[in-house]
Length: 276
Image 1: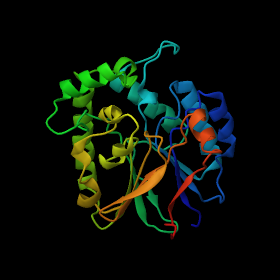
Image 2: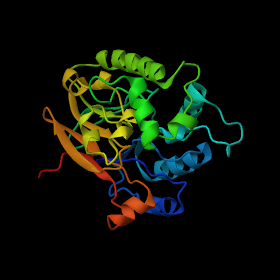
Image 3: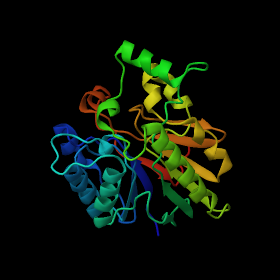
């Protein structure tokens, strides 16, 4: 097997210009795999279209949901909420032959491998907030500042009492699953949200960090045998290093963002590791 392990996120194909640029997301080898780290679309039919296009092009596609996929919007017929919606998303991806967080983790055997690619679905619990500030105080400040994630209106946690409880349940389930893996096998962890808080420190609006992850995953990159972490959500495309592990933000973002940078930025190469 040759090829490359590639990654992208935050395609947001409900925007016409982003939908058009999907034609430019292509492999350079028939053996290329593509990681899709969430926020493909809000509507399930748009998600199915985009994942279907990508699955036709790449040897394997591995997807995990972002917060936008979990939104329940009025424009969808038979729209579901919370965990039921998540299960709908998983079934949609599976029908297309796309790997999800609920499937056996695939193993990349190409250059830079073997590496287990683990798509994760973890959410957030509002713990990315200043020390000494309660969740309620942080949320009050966010509302007062006008910096509030749309999730508060559209991402429902049913049957959990709130999004933090859903996050904690997902973290516990996922942690057990990762702990059961062969500790000698390297991992690429894929999550829509960053697994550590540090990437959120450069946000233009620091209040938004509340909707960006959980401190409960802060040490996963050292606890487990992690070769790289792939994430999106922040729309700040870069690689940062923590304890020798590369954290790759792979988002495209909204048209106003990627056009301001000059052009569609393309997929990012995860493996084999690029020097320099």
